[in-house]
Length: 357
Image (spheres, rainbow, N blue to C red):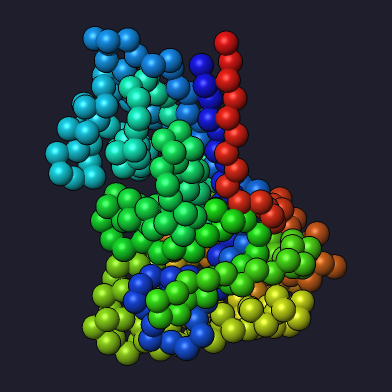
């Protein structure tokens, strides 16, 4: 029995989210999405049986440990036929749609017929806004690339992950989550015409960990920013959406400067700018409970906050100086939110193979 294990980190989006959707970034100068990988890990484990004998049909099993979903296909052929031209496989739980999509894609590279079992587990809560599903996507792609010897570069893996996830969620998917999951660390993902590249910050982990508190509201995302509505509104030249994006770009400049200079003041300025712009895009980006917790934190020393991802539940961050961290954390916990003690994760996706007799 051969076991392949892949692990990839989730992320905190610091500034510039939604700008990573093509072609939005083309309408602004020097745009970037800034995030940091954190130690909320998505794990994929693939177990391969021995090569099937003539006449035997190898089965295929999926399981999601954190979502409590599982499914078994009698054969790869059954998996291939089950989608019937859509992303919704017949009889397959929604939590496993992406699993099946990724496996179907890499099956094109399969070189032998053998039983396969694929199981996943994500540390980040579902709908937390930490890019957990994208981290799982990257981990699955890298694990299956290892299994099948598919000749993809890392940049091509990001394209595969983006396109497969898009067919599952049925709206355009951004790319920032894949970069943090694949490479780890703190980065500005800079998007130019015909080129996407990373600006890596190597000495900013302590700065982020000292000044940012990560909180989970206790509820999965329900509403918040609808990326497709925002995307369409931008293309349709909605003036309010255009103005909000201009403010997001300005905020991104401030956060990038904060990381370069290790400036607390610029970090506060940038995060507050992001927060105000996001509220313009979607008044429901924060639930009443999230807003109350943020105000409580500010009453004891917090100076900025923003939701993670699309909001409407899930996680948010609070910015506070180190000397105010303890009372801010205590106030947040008293408000009913969970404080996640995170670390910046320097490593990206890693794949390990083990063989047992």
